[in-house]
Length: 364
Figure 1 (cartoon, rainbow, N blue to C red):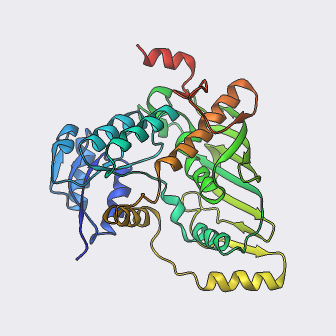
Figure 2 (cartoon, rainbow, N blue to C red):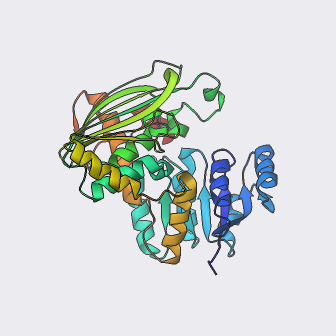
C-alpha cells in the first residue's frame, strides 16, 4: 500500500490550488490541518476540501509530530522564516514562488538543509509539467532538437487597481519585487528548465501601468550558458492576456499556445526543417504518454522523491537560477550595464535586491 503523507497547509489564497493538487492525489496525501490568519477564507477552504482542523497558530503546525510536510502558500516576505522553521522542526517543505527575497537566503537555506539531510524543500514551479513543454524536453533528450539558437518568451498580462488593493501587493517590503518576480518567474523558469542557467542579462524595467512601488513592465536580453540567446518581455498592462514561448533550434522550432496561465500545456507546435526530420519528430511525439500536469504532477513527483529519499523534482538550485535572473535584471536596470551570472556573495545585490531606501526601512 502506498504511504500517505500528511500535509499542514499555511495560507488561504493560492493554497486553494495546492489543495486541489493534493485532492487529485488522494492516495498519496491527506491534509488534516490548515492555518490562515484570514478566518473567513481559511474556514471556507476547510469546508470545501474536507479539512478537519483550522487554526491561526502557525507554530502549532511545526510542533506537531503527525505531519510530514508543511506547505507554505503565504506572501513572499514570510517564506524564508517559515521554511526554516519547517525544516528545523523535522518536516519536509513545499513553498510557493518566489521562494525567497535574496540569493543569500537561498544559500543560507542550503546550509540549513545540509544540517538536516533527510529533509526536502521543494519550490513551486508547476508550469514545467504541461504536456507541451514535456514533449519539447522529450525531443531534446532524444537528440531531435539540435543546437539551441534563440528563445523568446512573452508574459503579457493585465493587473488593474483591484489587484493591488490587497495590502501586501505592489510593495518592495512585502511582495519583494514586481512582475519579473511574481508573474513572469514561471515562464523564466521554463527557460532554465529547457536550456540550463543564464550567463548574462541586460534589462530595462519600468512602472507604467499602476501607481505601485515595483516594476510592471520589463524587457530583457539574455545570454545562456549553453551559448544560445533569449529575449524576455513582461507587462501587466496587456488588455489581451497572453503567454508565449518559442524555442528555435537548428533542427526544429517549438511554439507554445498563448493561453496566459496554461502555456505549458498542449497543443504546442513542433516544426522541423525537412519532411524526413518532421517524420522523426512526429513519431517521437506519437509515443509520448500524457499524464497529470501542474500542481498535481509536481506533488506526485514530490511524493516519489520523499518515499525514495531522492532530490525533489524542483530543487533549491532551480529556485536559485530563477532568482539569479531576477537579481541580475534589477542590477542591470539600475546600472545600465549587462550583468553576468551566477550571482556570488560579493555581488552588491546578493543579500537583497530591494532599493536602498527600502533596505534601510527594513533594517529599522
